[in-house]
Image (cartoon, rainbow, N blue to C red):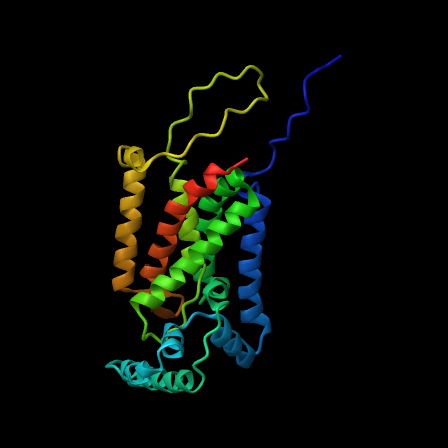
Length: 270
């Protein structure tokens, strides 16, 4: 009698061998952007942007109405006359409708400004979300991404409270997953001798901060991430036909949450 277990087939291309929850996340982001680009009328798309994106100035005047004048002055700051005019009109709309919706701290992550934007985020999601989902499962993967998005939105509002530019994009949630993955993916393989060819080595423990700082690969990754986010935050990047500044503060908020939240989730991993 053959006691060899049935081993999983390994004939799938790695690109399409992502965990199901990561594949589903990418599909949702791409589908939402396709719906906005190809299906929704412009008026509906603008409605979705206004009600689902995170607008710091709306939260500021909703919490502290005494800052309405500050918001209007910030909207009329020096710049291209057409852009300043549109910003002033939108600021007056926010002042007239200052109510803030709590769900926008999460829903903004579902919207993107261009195909370049959404594809860039999904590539990083595939790369760093996959190891997190494989190690922790769909629930903890989702918690890290969601809390990272919320934390990124909160930090963005705190740092730029008078901005009327809608914050959109999954980058904060993706940054949280990147930080979480950095806690364990840069370690060398564990010294483990399997008894049978189908047995897998035990998962590696998370590296402590001190261990990460002694890991050259991890340090280089963290340094490159911090430097590129700083540079992208002070310059405008061309996303298709539109030049826009990267919300580095949202990325930082998500990254910090992913980095420090993961050990708490790891303690209860079954």
